[in-house]
Length: 160
Image (cartoon, rainbow, N blue to C red):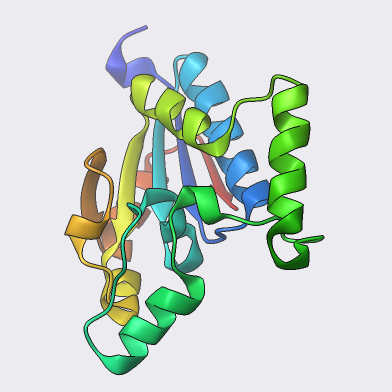
């Protein structure tokens, strides 16, 4: 199928919860494996999926936010049953036992399949997350106008 005939999926990833990131990456990899062009726009808490394992923030509030919510994709907890990290441990064990890929593996599969990752520049500015704190595979940090342009060209747009 030529690029101009390919179907396109645009995803806004707002949540950094394990289950919601799992859903977003599963949809993205499934679509990409089906020869769709896939764009993922990560905003606010969803930026966790793109962060490297390092602290962020320059101001007092930025550093506090970085410490309170800090961490990379491996620190994602379920939206329910978190129990101070026990839920994350339990879900990872259950996923491994069922041979379900981890979030890190799903993200890498998305990268390998050509899914495009975009960080929300406004959220990054507010949360004091510099581009250098994101994984190298992020295509760019953009504003909502860029994502809306991508979404207008899409056959499917989802918010996770």
